Image (tube, rainbow, N blue to C red; front, side):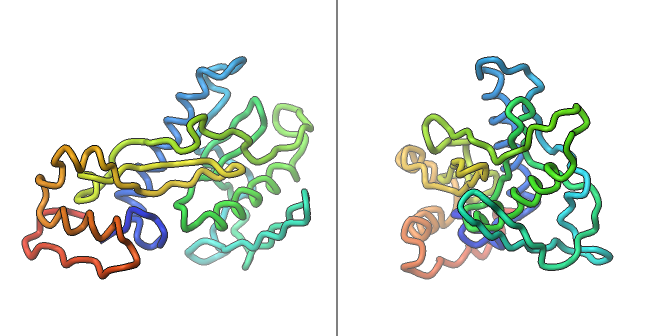
Length: 222
């Protein structure tokens, strides 16, 4: 069973939760960009290639871990092992501002920041770019006007009965977690699922009590 608080990245299902949440965040960000002054519809794009920016291990499966060292306004990214050297993918690219964004669970914020600067290093060592520009790339500078943005119900049961996806932006890293929506709880959403009330209380008091057992009858898929 997953944990929508996202504090343990292993507890966010990468296929049934991670991918749809990523897509939701990307599409919402791009839609918002259509209303920014001076922007055209295709100035902001998702899943953009970056030559040499792959995070995959060379000759092996799995991703490379990166260490990020910060010295005031200087950043040094050190891969834990050699990368494949293949093409990588950036979650969101703002071509007009020449800024990029990486999406992560709240538990993976440090990883997201390191990966963001790995992509920046790959981009900035290949200047001028295909468009001839020598202007360096930087981390995304935008934030949500409301600080935290509610992006609708969590994508999987049973959490979608009372948990919403909430995201915010920290220096180019878009972090997300699951937060209880008390309005839907008050409206009786928990009555639609077995053991819902117990799961709600566990998430609300996470870290203080053991998670209640799931119903013996399989009523949800993961």
